[in-house]
Amino acid sequence: MNEKGIIVMWRKYLKMLASVLVMALVFTMFVPVPEAEAAGYLTQPAIYSNKIVVDINQNFYPNLNRYTIKQVNVDVRVNNGNYKRVITGTTYPEEIPTQVEITSVSPINVYDIKVSFDSIRNNDGGSYSNNATLYSAAMAPAKVSGLYQRNWYCYICSLDTAWTKQQSVTGYQYELYNYKGALIKSGNSKSYSAYANFSNLALQTYRMRVRAYTTFNGRTSYGAWSDMLEIVPPVKKLTGKSKKKKITLKWSKVPGATSYTIFVSRNRDSGYVATKTVSAKKNKVTINKMGKKKLKSKKWYYVYVRPNRKVNGNNVFSTFANASTPIVYGKVR
Image (cartoon, rainbow, N blue to C red; front, top):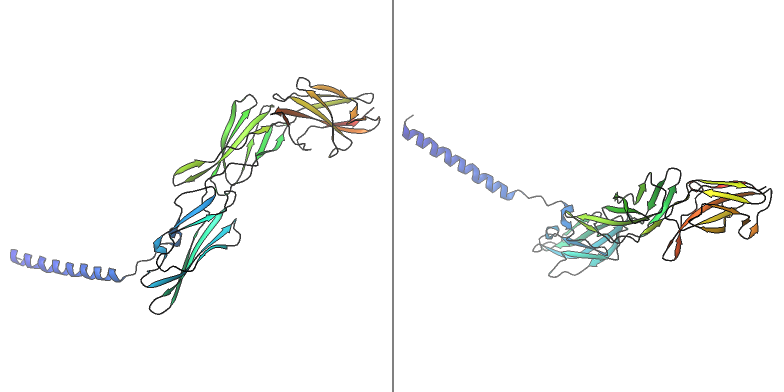
């Protein structure tokens, strides 16, 4: 094939390729573009601890030249309960909402936000509706409350603490200090757990605080620290001997305690009466009463010793628990 023939062949090829590209472009223009997923219609521009703000993507609504929006609704579900309508808009002659705000909320709950609309087609009156849901809306953390000493297992020196759960946050940060103010342990706890466990602790009093945090759009925001929890463990070892209507007790000291109170009962599980309080310098005492009543011979008595720590003029102490509080008992001679 000569040079002229080659040029003619390439011209025919280029014309054919151009025709194919034009046909492909025309076909593409008539192929409908699928709508975005409903989950992308609703987003949060920022987080707050007392409200939830939701932006509504304008693509959520139909073409306003062809449709008229008759009603826009906002429904809220709390902790996977039933949806309840909180906002209903019925007239939108010119502008439809692109942002909604839900108030009277708290991070202790989890909220799902559903937005829906009803519309009619202008040319024939046909109806069209749509809805989208924002699940588990993020919230800025509030100050942690309800922090308490759930249990202290005295024989293994293990501490359990818990607090009021904030379900709309990412997790918690906690710090444990000894009674001298030194930081002993710190760490994080996920929002579903809302407790912290500390094992193999030294026998002494402690202080603890917790704060919640939320990670949103790549940034972590923290709530205020909780009030400081004063932790006073029970004594680890307690022994007792009875003689002549008296009981002599001896226990292991708890560093940080400011006093000890002795409780006596005729029943192991209940009825304990505060009988005597001694200073933290002592770890041995003899009693001859249950409250104000003298001990009787040949009667069974149950005794435990409660360490106390005075904070701002008030005594702080552990709650009595049969499973973790050492008890001595016996028949008084």
